[in-house]
Image 1 (cartoon, one colour):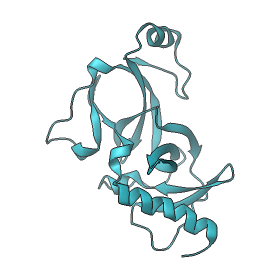
Image 2 (spheres, one colour; image 1 turned 135 degrees about the vertical axis):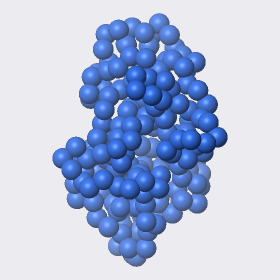
Image 3 (cartoon, helix red, strand yellow; image 1 turned 30 degrees about the horizontal axis):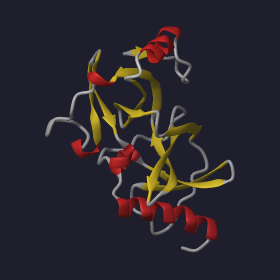
Image 4 (cartoon, one colour; image 1 turned 90 degrees about the vertical axis):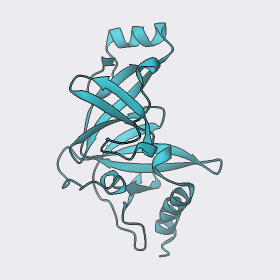
Length: 183
């Protein structure tokens, strides 16, 4: 495992390790409700500041609302609520992790509220351990796996597994509803 700087510029050793070892994946490490977790950079498009999230009536409790980013209306998910944790108040480190998921052959952009970004982490695929059937703070069905690091095990969240197909379709409709002005 090799860490990168705070905003994604891999350190020289990490970049060399990646090109020399194609079985290395990068994960963004962030916090939600005081818990660190990682998500594969394969799903991440960008990180934006938390500001001007507009509520949309009739959405599930884990949907905070929508945000307008570069001409697109993006649903914003409170990951703490979805993971059945107590959400932290919005602070100056709160940001929105923009991810893209595939639903019925189309790309659905989502924003995930996080309390802060920690680092980028290079992980050799062989270091990823399967999630246990019990004993983690996150439902194991949402996990890609766990990786050992200083201070304990880091859960690797698979954002595609966090939402069922019906939930993703409903969240995608949230953006359409907000754009069309229909509730």
